Length: 385
Ligand SMILES: *Cc1c(COP(=O)(O)O)cnc(C)c1O
Image (cartoon, rainbow, N blue to C red; front, side, top):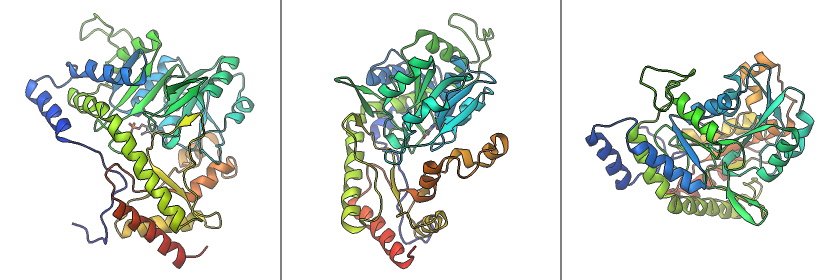
């Protein structure tokens, strides 16, 4: 037991007796992989998203990789995406030898700046990876317009955005249902979890068929266990994870509003106690966020080093927090391989220096939220910029 003053984690999964019973039932059944829980989970997700196919895999990263392969991206191809994301949304392109090309982000919603897509298109551009960062959806109606005009494939990285909605004309649709294919992910810090896991969603029969085959060593439907039609992987998700996921999906209607409530409490507390801190933007009228993390920005006079010092201090007293995100283009191997440098993406770098995520999960109590806000307030007072 550590001796910190508080014990407030950054995130915490919401697991009930129902999830525990569902997993135990699988373990007692003797069928731990490729059993009945896999199609059950896939159907639950497809129904939730309102889409034809869902293909469960063992992580969001492996699902992104399969999407990149299913779309046929290859060495020499360029893919436009954001640097203000989790590393996997850019790495998946590199897995196949293609090159991620970063555009800057919008300072308000922190997603890639749609106005910059066309300027980044070259004759090598083949696809766009749109990341719905922090659960705030990208306006996919506008992205798809650009993509259709230039004949580009679109992958939606909705790993942080299950349940986020985008208005298309008069209709609200799920984030992840606009591009050729999309990913939801289920690591334990996400809105819902399968322990480890992810799921590809698509309306495209061929993409779904290829992903089903590639996640299972390149086997095709009807082929024997040792017959392999194409290069494949072991990206399968176990039946324990699928059973856990099916119960979690059924609880999204309860989980997502609770997360929104916790976010609203933070917003109120910060507005009252610390108006100089910049808060997540409110939803514009055509987008509905699914709360994944609560990310604040320190006032602009603070440096990245000071933000890091605050994170170290909060962790030291038992309050979970993190830099969120650390720009991908400044990661050592991107600098080495592609020559990216500071100054290339000013808005992304500004957010990388000023933003941080603070404890956020369904069951976070108002009491703990008050502690988080007052400890940040105290530190800022004692450490002026
Ligand atoms: C979580 C996440 C992923 C996938 O992560 P895994 O750990 O591989 O499941 C991909 N992209 C983004 C933006 C994420 O937040």
